[in-house]
Image (cartoon, helix red, strand yellow):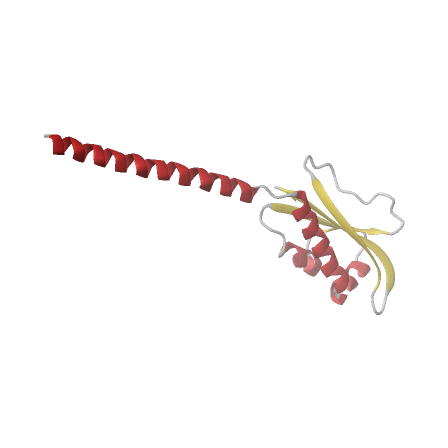
Length: 139
């Protein structure tokens, strides 16, 4: 009778240990997943700088910026070159403005927006200065 009780106690301790390990593992998993979802503003700002820099250094994309009329860019090679590199948790808009435009902004979005811009004044063949702005925000 005594050995049966000892066996039951042993199994209960094993079950308790397994449940304890599962609880600890689930807490760590929850913390890691939550940390992954929280992006810092510095990471988003660095992404914006990198993407703008890539456009600034690419001659064909510079030509597109210079040749387009001022306004939002919603399609084409320039738009796709940025859209392909934007992570799923972010949304973006590109806007081309003339140098003379005092205001080159975005409509009212109720989120924290990260903005980076560059002035592209010419390509090898054309002088037509434009400001290119990249707006990024979390979904």
